[in-house]
Image (cartoon, rainbow, N blue to C red):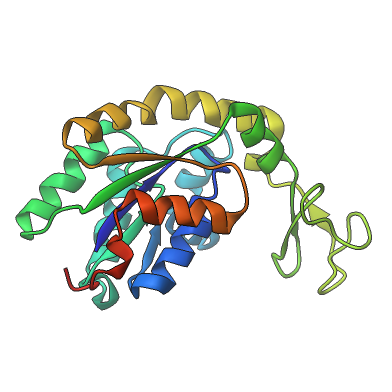
Amino acid sequence: MRVVLLGPPGAGKGTQAQALSALWGIPQIASGDLLRAVVREDSELGREAASYMDRGQLVPDEFVLKLIAERFRKKDAHCGFILDGFPRNVSQAEALAAGLERAGLKLDKVVAVTLPDEEVVKRISGRRTCKNCAAMYHVVFEPSAKPGVCDKCGGELYQREDDAEETVRERIKVYDAMTLPLLDYYERLGLLAQVDGMGRPDEVEKRILSAVNGAGAQSAQS
């Protein structure tokens, strides 16, 4: 099973990818996680990636494609994968299709999770992260017991630069300009399904499973 999850920042793609990964027994491959991992290395490559991410801009295609290609080569991705946050534009989608074709593979479904802009801002700008243990909170949906203090380790909570409202709105603009054309691209290929991202995660998961027409019952070997 090879699935792409699309959607604006804050649409819950990561949560849904984790659930589908457990259900289908295939890895979640999140471009954001791969990028943050390289940023933590504090290498020249990591600092380059951070310079884009901190401004809410997309990291250049060739950079992301290199990270994705390296991840595909790992053994756990040989039977399938769930792509979360990639591709983000048509050129990336074309590069992905070409790479899969060379390997004799193809995508089974592309699911776009939709969400209103103001809901995106509300979800992301309310996030807070612990400086010590990296535990995540939300000032509205999942606040810590004591404002600004981590429940787990007592560390200070802060707002990441890419979670600030101004940056979030810039990320929405980038998504609209660069990623929305993917919907037309995958629609023409007959791969696209759109689902409503509002509601509880389990409700959204059911919509996704319905959108892939029972694909969750299929073997990950397909």
